[in-house]
Structure formats: C-alpha cells, structure tokens
Amino acid sequence: QVQLQESGPGLVKPSETLSLTCAVSGFSLSNGYYWGWIRQPPGMGLEWIGSVYHTGSTYYNPSLNSRVTISVDTSKNQFSLNLSSVTAADTAVYYCARLSPHYDSSGYADYWGQGTLVTVSS
Amino acid sequence: EIVLTQSPATLSLSPGERATLSCRASQSVSSFLAWYQQKPGQAPRLLIYDASNRATGIPARFSGSGSGTDFTLTISSLEPEDFAVYYCQLRNNWPQTFGQGTKVEIK
Image (cartoon, rainbow over all chains, first blue to last red):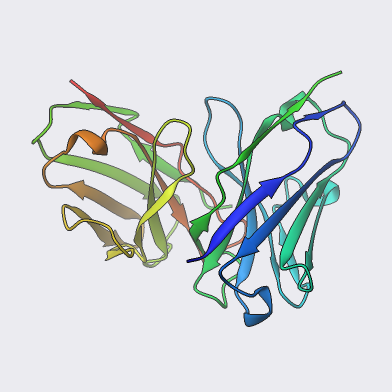
C-alpha cells in the first residue's frame, strides 16, 4: 500500500522559505512515477504547485515558478518542496501526492498524503 | 491556461436521490479529466479518471461521462457518506488545473 506523509514547520514568517518533505512508503521512488505537491488555502479550492520525477525532472505551475523548487531524494525515498519569499497568501494545507499514469508529469493524484497546514505569519 | 468551470456551486439533495455535477472546460481536453471527492479535514480522493473510469475501490454508484469540453459526474443514489465537495481536474496539460468545486449538501 502506497503511503505518503508530509512533514515540516507549521508556521513560517513572511519573506522566508517554506520547506516541506514528503516521505513515501510502500513504493520506491526509483521505480518511476511523477510525484506532486498541491495546496489548498483555508476554505478554498485546490491549486497545483508542481511535480518531480525520480530522475529529478520537474514541472512547476507558472504562477509560482520563480519561487518554487521541488527535489527528490531516492536514497531516503522522499521528495521536497521549497517555496521562497512567502506571504500570507501562501497559507494553506499542503498535500503531496503520487501522479498517475506513471509517465505523466501532470497526471491524476491517485495517492495523497494527509496534508499539513502551513501558516505564514510573523 | 485551460479553465474548468463547475456547476452548480452547491447541490442540495436528500439521501437516495440522484446527483448530477457538471464540469466545463474552456477548450477541449479530450477525455483527460478526473473527479475527486473531498470531505472536511481529509485529502481529496480520486473517484474517476480519464472522464469515465472508476478508480480502484470506488463504488459503482459513481459514474463519469463526457469528452471535449463538457463532463458530468453522476451519483446514482446518494449515500450519507457521499455528501462532500467534488472537484474536477484535467491532465495532459500544464498547468493542470482544478475546477472550483461543487458542494453536495444534505437537503
């Protein structure tokens, strides 16, 4: 059974960098698939942040492109999100997910983490 | 960027009734569309992929149809656990986007 778990600070100060990690169990990242980050501001809809392949190839939402970095660590079977220069508008629940089909960087999210709330506030 | 518009915003129905949710794309997305269900405090769950295929473990009362620009999610007979928010999402396009959601609430 594929399981994903997000971790990272729940509170980040404005202008700083938000850093989250998604640990994957039950599936080796080296076996392929794209892995993504999606966020949801409180009471609002879903927004795609970006995705990464086990080779390190990445795709980012253009609306966040200049601030986003997603990386993968196959030795630890995890992938990470860095979002720089955060503002209150970046306050959201952040989800990590596996994307399907395996070859599609913009695929459907068939396995999700439980999500982690990150609040941007001084 | 392709925009997905869901309607209605809210659907008020009783258990046992049929629910019909719509998702319209601003340009053709072929059949590259999914539907998700989200309950309060939970991550979304994939229900339907590629417009009409049920994901693993999804009950048969959920069905999807459509292609091109117009898509429908149908719940044939609402169970108490089906009252939730439903989102559509396209793939095979960057950035992939979600619709704004339809809330199915108990009447």
